Image (cartoon, rainbow, N blue to C red):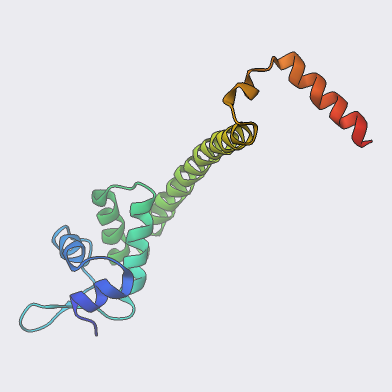
Amino acid sequence: MYTISAAAAKIGLTAHTLRYYDKEGLLPFVNKSASGARLFKETDFEWLAIIECLKQTGLPLQKIKQFIDWAMQGDTTLKQRYKLFLERKAEVEKQIQTLRQARQKILYKCWYYRTALAAGTSKIHEKSLEQLAKERYFARKTKT
């Protein structure tokens, strides 16, 4: 069994966060000592990992609580839980696409500034599109 501080340290959260999760009803699986101290079992860490995963996808705590409630109800809620994870999967795929687009822009800007630094000026990028196309065409011709 882990105290709240030990559990928090093990998973990289604060004890305050775990207390907040408990207050919000996200930790019904956590045992309490006779004095009311929260005691975490090894199996509780998988629950905490799922909570953090859902949180990282942007799911509000209220909906995470709904998932926990469904899980506590058992197999009668399998369909709802499956649907929730399908929705999260779709949302994560959208986020990945958005991040890929942002990455492309960032890569372009890295190239832009690297080449401007090498040339000593950003004016290097003021060439016309026609000039750039010619340079690329002739560069390919000389490689073949």
